[in-house]
Amino acid sequence: MLSIGTIVMGAADVRRAAEFWGRALGYVPREGEVDDGWTVLVPSEGAGPGLALGRSTTPVQEHPRVHLDLYVADAAEQEAEVARLVSLGALRVDWDSYPDDPDFVVLADPEGNRFCVIDSTHG
Picture 1 (cartoon, rainbow, N blue to C red):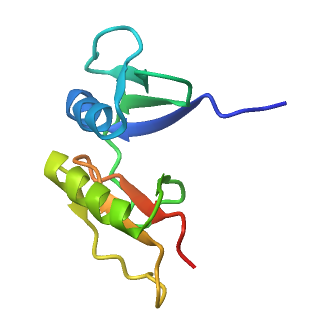
Picture 2: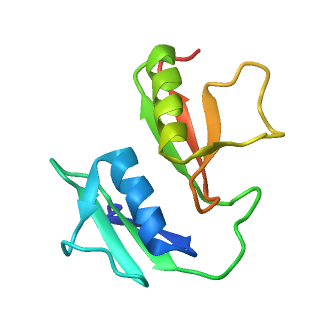
Picture 3: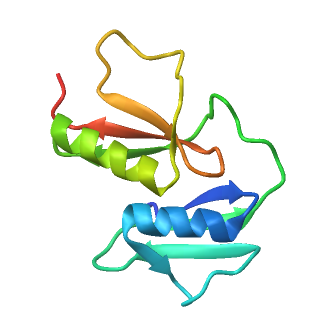
């Protein structure tokens, strides 16, 4: 049986991306330190997929084919997490594909990679 072990994302500045995602998710560098070209972050406690960050010079996709969905318990937690992530350096994305009553908020990390914060109790 297959399982997701690591999610890989490109970053122009691996250290900046690792700082953001480490603080956002409570992850730490698997090898104990961050490399300029490649770093794998893992949960500091418990199990979960790793997040690998590799140096990339390709442009960020405005409408990416693959992105992270981060789930929260309810609308209040969604609002709090979006505010926390913005304080860490994420940006709100002016998303042109929101439905009438969205359960998600689209953000971009400091590298411009899009991700969503989803209210898991919505609708």
